[in-house]
Image (cartoon, rainbow, N blue to C red; front, top):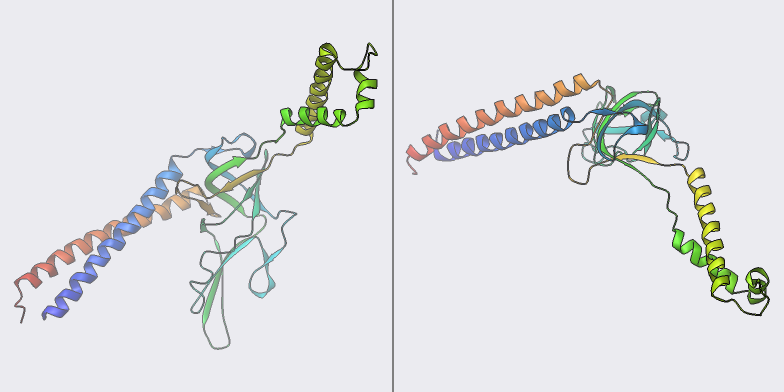
Length: 272
């Protein structure tokens, strides 16, 4: 082999080692994230990184999604010779996951999706295509960042707004709070007015909390940890992630050995 061929082989092996390290790191980091996170019921899941198991369902407020040939689904990812990169990340439309305790909204942006449903077909020219899909009713396993919205009620602002509203009607204010009928609001009457505004605002806050419907979300973690949506059982997912580790290790070692071997040959090879 000449110097150019040896350089090409050394570069190829170096690239193989880099790719192997990436595959190993990807599989290792995701497997650790999955194994180190305990499953939670949706209603009692702690805020932060969480693991949910439940049934996929369509959210009422979200339009219906259709995959190839008009098949209704909750999520799909198109793969093919012409559009492998265009839609490889999949659709971003939210859907739901529910268990016996409650439900959460799934935001699939930036998720690693593992689906058991792959639909294949060929067009008139013989080009092959495929779609990974998630259907309503699928059993889901999700690891990601879980958050729940909290009722927003500003008690101080509500009290201030009530006092402002009452003071905009001086005649009504005196009729309501001027108990000694001297034509002014003294310190004691002002204190009673403020206490009544506080009581009414607190009653409104209690009513708002009673009627409030919390929204649970599970999405991509901001710290870069794995966000996995899978229709496979957890054991199957762990096996696939472990396979990434093993493939990565083999590719990394083969690349290192190959780069070292061909690099040594290149160094001993005449430059001319």
